[in-house]
Image (cartoon, rainbow, N blue to C red; front, side):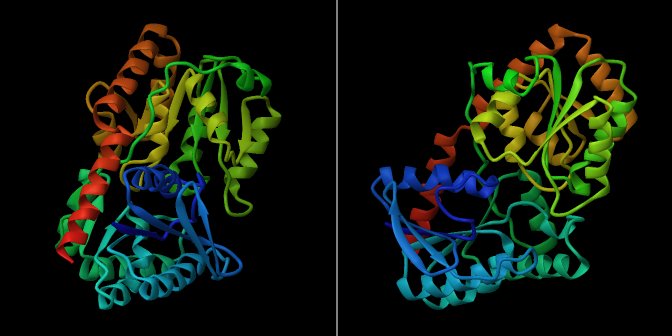
Length: 364
């Protein structure tokens, strides 16, 4: 089959969840005998073959508000000319361009991701654009897919279509060297970790308030940055000067992130908006004892026996309890790895996407 993937930043890339997903899926589809075209972003229209994957970069406008729409438009135009047996589209903002693909009889499988129109990082206009894009996606995609049952429920209620469920994936890690963590001045099993963009819906400020209430001597390590200067960044700098926080900023080295999760004493997952979060799965697969924000999406992933918080006081209480109990941390490590092994394996994810795309191509 000839499959196309449209809407990510390209291949190979591990910038975010969609990019890691495409980085895993595209070469696996090639290994199974399919032809795979992945669209990415660039300053000019270029084409090359990487690891057997045809990578086409199109032109667009590199800005926070226009990059997704502009690159999505040029990629959709190019794909409409080239043609494909089926296309996987990520990001509901690309729902605006689905009619062009439908006119060329290219069936589309659109990954709805989370509820982008509820994210506080977007302006009112930006949220309206995403919600309208979601409506266009519901109206024009041949099939929808969600990586969370809770998100599928929202789409069924809000837009009248129920996406099929295909989860995200993560590896299970049993061993990691300590050298890179120690090179950052961190002692393995003696720090609390947060990996999140510094946006309101990820509750980093709630975590910082909880740390100020803590009785444990463990330091807090924060990986993440914001799009521009923010009150959260100022607060991180102040706590860093006090020796209470180690702020690493944005880290795109996936191996270093895996080391940080693997050797952490506790991982705090504060994400409140969206479906199955890739960082949460990676943390669980690395055996990081996890305390998560109490949301239906996080509860779906973590299942029974997990630890949750809703505010800084609850988080401080959970942190003190988990930090003081090595046996509990060991139990949480084992639970996380078992959960990933049972429900979030990449091989199963790739099987499901191949089946869905093949069925769309056959129906064409």
